[in-house]
Each structure stands twice: as C-alpha cells, then as structure tokens.
Image (cartoon, rainbow, N blue to C red):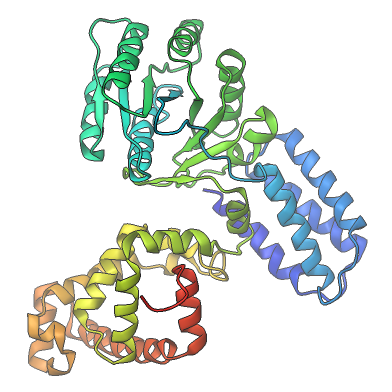
Length: 446
C-alpha cells in the first residue's frame, strides 16, 4: 500500500533534504510535486488542497533553526503535516476494565474482510490478556457463521451462535451469555451487503441499540480507494462510528483512502490489516505511517515484530554466538523462520530507514531465501553444525538434494562465511550492544 506515493515522496526527500539553501520557488516546486503525487494516490481533492495550502504556509513561515538545513526543515514540515493528515496520534480502543463487559460492533460491506478482521481483533485482545467472545450475527451471507467459527478455533477464542434468524435476538442472547460466563469483551460480527442499503442500516441500528457498543468500527477495504471514504461517511451518519479498520492495507493499490478518511469523516483509523494471517492486524500509528511514506522507515514497528519472535534471552544468546564464532547453519535456518513470521522481505524493507524506496523491489529475491533454506535442509546434522567439513563431494550432494547447483551451494557457503565475519565485528562493537539492549527495552544483560 502507498508504494507509488512513498516512492515519489522519498525521492523528493532525497532531492531536497540535503540542500543547504532553498528558495520560495524550490518550496513551491516541491509542494506542486507533492500535490500531483497525492492526487495520483487517489487522495480526496479537498484533502489535497487543504494539505498543500497548510504545508506551503507553514514551510514559508517556518523559523530558521540552527544546525538544521532548510531542506531538512522543509521535510520536517511535510512530515508533521502528513502526521496531522493521518490523525495525529494513535487512537486505541476505548474498552472498559476486565470487571465489565466491553462491546465492539463490527460493520462493513460484504467482501470487506469484516469476519476475518473480527477474528484478528479477538486474537489481538486475547494476547493482551482479555477474554473475548465472538458473536456470529451475520445471518445473511451463506456459511458466515461457520467461517467465524473456524477462524475462532484457529485464534483460540470462543464463538457464540444463536438460534433463529433475527440477529438482534442473537446479540441479546450473546450479551446475557457473556455476563454469565465472565467474558470481558464481546465482538459482534454483523451482516454486510454488496452495497449500502436501508435494510442493512436499519438492522445495524437495531443491533447497536441492543448491545450499546463501546466501539463501533467500520471495516473498509483499502483497495476501494475513495469509495471507502464515502462508505465510511454513510455508516457514520447512521450508526455513529468510533473508528475505522482498513483491511488489505498490504495490497498494491494507491492508498488514498488511508490518507483521506480521517479528514473527511473525522473518525480515526485504529487498525490496518497487513496480511491474511490472523496475526496480520496492526495498530494504525500516524507518525509511523508518515515515516514509511517519506521513505524514513519504521524502526519501532520493526523492533516490535522482532520482539514477537525472539525473547530477550534468545537475543543475547544469538549475540554471544556471533561474537564467539559459533553461529551455524542451524541458527541461520532458525533466523529465516523467524523472519518469515515477521512478514515478507518487502514489508520488512519498508520498515528499515534508508532502504524504503532505495531498494529495487525486483532485487528483493525471496526465492533465493527459499533455495538457501532447501540447501540447509539437504545438509546432514553435522554439516549444519560445522560448515567447514562440507567438501566438494558433500556440496554436490547438497545441490542434488536441494534442486540447485554446486555453484549455488559454493556461493551460499561463501556468503554465509562473509556474513558471519561481518556480524562478528558488529556484535563486538559497544555501540551495537548498547543499541541492541535499548531496542529490547533492557538496561543490562538478564
């Protein structure tokens, strides 16, 4: 999502960011480029006009700060305006404490990913220590109840199925059941339609009145562009939304909805769907998204992803292996698998400062990583632990077992040796160690 916009703005950042002197004409030219980039990204026209006018006014009236170049100052203005455009600060769910039942009402059109998103949200709340209950109130779409039940099973959360065909009765029964069974969060999955209609809205109003939700969230398909903004306005007028979840945010569409929806509707984007997996739901942080758009990366999200796959003790154990030259193909295979849990290589590159927009996506070869995994899996246990014993005969066998060539195996082993040497030097650097501990949130070795 936002790849084309990010590419254009990242290029602009590189062009103007280092300039020691910029004129009003430089600023106006840059703002004109930003305007075109936003329009091409399908951002609402009124939003674009407001954004460029405010950016120009602020950039031309900005006070000069010593030690900061005018180019850097202009980029800071653009960044601040983007953050404001996206909503300013992250808006968390407003839920009650564990002693009361909180209700989240999910709404959206058919095909927006509402049911899957409900399960993703339940899993996220479960990981935060809450006890969620999914409610199957979509009684229109065939197999919707069964789909929710399957997803609930994968997420390890419970689902309430009512009887009859009246979704209001189902929700009322779910509320009683949640109170008796000590659930602290009820997530209601409602029916969608292929288009907004009066029947859908009337049903949602009745369900809302029956459960008095703490959060009323619209699940909007980010691939629909400006239609998502119009849909959000319609739903907000009838059921008073408290926020929006943009599904399919990892798609390759232009992304104008993400940049327009807060300004047009006044409702914050609270989450974004970043993959089809159940853990593919991320909080929407305007400052982090603005950094990604400008090609500045997003280290905080990257570290959060890493922390989900590696404990502090494991990170220090890995550091000791690197420093002591005991890092093996067994460890490399483990790191490959951890990286896959964090997402695709392309998604990780977007989070690394300096790489987003600077690396040709065509050169990000995930297929090569799969080939390297196949080579490791074709090795014997002793070969994985000591690559120095892998002679020509063993390399030929590994090539046959992995469906590659002896040349590819030779290149992989040389690459592994160079990587180990580079990581060994880095791991012994005091600045690297301090940065590692800081990112892991510790002040000393545990």
